Image 1 (cartoon, rainbow, N blue to C red):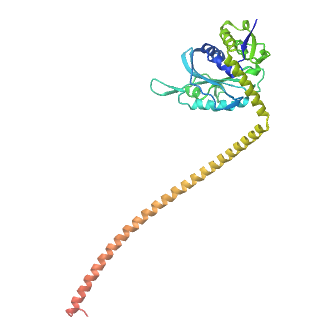
Image 2 (tube, helix red, strand yellow):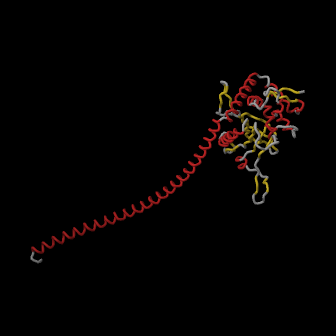
Image 3 (cartoon, helix red, strand yellow):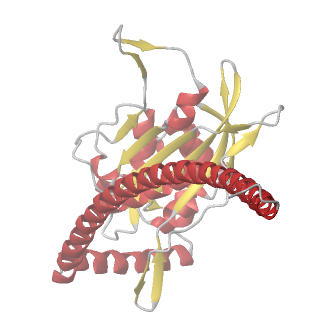
Length: 340
């Protein structure tokens, strides 16, 4: 028997679904295929990108968690960055936000010795459009350590490497299709837009198609379908997406893209000029250092000449005294008739 659930492709439904901690833990642990013991929402921010639609505004949703994961060696704490976008253009926003996560000093914890440990980051993306890798609903992207000389994968772990690289999971909502090949694809089939009814806000699914452990998710989405505020916000999102699609096709959007490309090119040129100016500044600084050294040498030579001048002046004074004494002696001799 089919049941009606709210369509989680809408941000408001996705948000409602993930606000249930048990459902959020179920979703995260299923995607990353690790045993999530606890999942704690972290203070998350909404983007500043808002577009007015019918007197209202809509804000793109992102959510961060700290997750305690049970491993064969004990437990580890990781950051879960979860974001959702309807258009591929939002990927640049993802990248900017990921950069902020790496730079945020709060995304670390103190060890017993007082040093900071950078927490690993897991990134989960829900994309409305596919990325050109068709027929693959869920992609996992992870880095491996390669011994270049031996051309072999290194199995050892490194905190340095894990702190500077992150694993990613990409859910391509538009690629959802039957048959479901594993339990994760069964779980994520709640996003399958092929199950839409005549009302795009509602998906019709068979509850018995889902394992018992996934039923809390179905119940949560059934509940969302009956919440008036959720229904109203879905309508606002429809209007916003319609506005955005029309805008993307408009001449204004093309002009804006051309201007952005021109600005990017100008910034690149300015960066090159800045590098040249920096090089010139370095040369000028070096020349200044040489001139300063030469000035120091000249100053030293001036000091030596001044000392020599002082010595010569003293000798001159002594000679002048002797000349006066000789002149006085000559006069006395003349007076005595002893000097012609």
